[in-house]
Image (cartoon, rainbow, N blue to C red; front, side, top):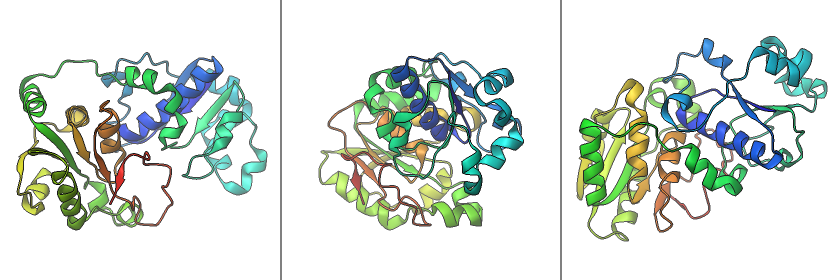
Length: 292
């Protein structure tokens, strides 16, 4: 079996699942998700994949971890083996992402293994794209205000625009790592799209919609989407995916909002500097996306 360690917000969970799912399909093995990390995880909305999507998900048990990893299955052992100087102790079945860029070593992993990493590149699951899109179909119909926003999105030449703030803006260490997209970035992106899309209507999504209202300068038709909070936040991703075109933040949440749009002629504008700390994210953005 393939066991994928799942941690982080919804966008991270989707990358981890998609990569492991593609590998399990390639190897013809079962897939189970280790969500034990959420026992003490207080950020975002916890583990969400099972609640939101139509995919059939099996949760890994302690026994599953022991079968695959042996003595390395304990939380203490796994944390210890994450350290680079302890890499020589890892068994071949304990597969840790060595760097942020696409890693070809995943093509050589054994049929029974435990995956630990973020795996943020479409290259890991491009061959299973159709299945991943099916797995990431949403369970519940849109209702009430979300249904009304969806109707407006489908009636317009719609462009989603995502402003990611939250802990990016409030936690100095997180800000130093990720950084915030500048108003110049949004201005250039809006201009880029408006020059190529007839009568665009921008739908603005944010975890700080008040900041977006006060600071964005959009001279085109626009609507600020403020209907989803807490456990309903995932519907922002869903609504983004219904738009024709996208301006995303340096956020896996809006990355997936753009990716889930199946239109081949979509314009996706993304920040070329994904990280403030200069981490090389060359494999994160699909080639067809525009980097500004």
